[in-house]
Length: 465
Image 1 (tube, helix red, strand yellow):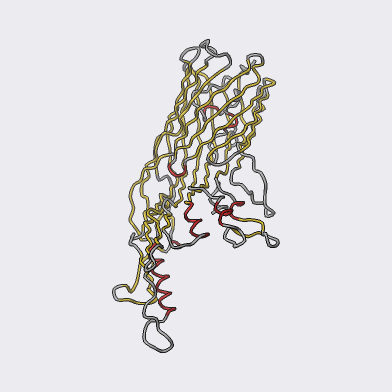
Image 2 (tube, helix red, strand yellow):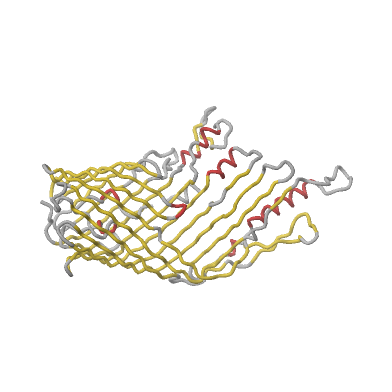
């Protein structure tokens, strides 16, 4: 879970306050580039990938207090207080990846315009606190493990943007995006609970659903299993054998639309506060409608275990204990066994992002700016928030840099970006979350890290003084 589920970065937020950053329009469509325009290197123009999460390897493994090596949080030498203090109500591992295949910006139509063709992917995993509590502190009580699930989505987009100067102080912008759905998958456990509080019986409930929207995907043949201990009327049970799942074909499986909206307010130009500019944007307001989504779900029947009965002793009457135990295992498997639920259409949102920002340029030295950016991802149980304080320095027309710190739902982080943009060439490299320490096996101990870079060709002189 820690390694495979944790790959996020939609935009390089560390570059939000750089005037010479060509992709400012992807964080706020109202932003205007400081040149006449640009054209990206194919594929290499804007590569943005990262890992996010509020749990990491360090939360699952500890130094062995009684010897060498590592032990997991389940080890008796790790106290419950120490182990459970590392987990949250909702433990998230996320990924967003963005690669712009081709991007162009230019001034025309009384404003600044952008055209971008790119691909994006989003992965999310959510594990409730109670699941870890159950494994560490199993006692006779109720456990609610609902909202345990994962989601993945990949799509291509063609985005057309335009920003316009309304007057000296106000600038507005927007984008329309045409979305081409490549793949969609979702697994969710609703009403997943264990009632172990009763001394006479245990009750388990689970409503499991899995959806896969990939062109040509099928679950394959259903598998029939027999109960080891054959009670009348319960001889066999059915489940999907996921090893038989197959994809026969390729192509797009969904289409949709999205919108970005943005605004900037320069309070100095309105003669209110020298050097202060406020901005806001709402990104990825949209949907993708998927066709031929394969659905699998369990029966949702409650499982009741009231103990072993009529146990055979030696050669006496009754049922052997090992057969009753085998039957118990089969019936627990039946609780979450998935059956083919047919296929149908499905509409999914993109996960909107809200940015609120304030930047202040020193009146005595305009090349030094301070900025505060608040970013909120709105995506159900995979939502997160981050506040980032940045210091930006532009000592020359061809060079900008920013250092920043952030705090939020996914922990504290340190970010940076360097933007080198002489007249005919532009290169940026940066990170919103520094990678931090590694284990001896070269696995990052934290799940927050990313890498962003891009190469572009600007045209026109810089407007930075």
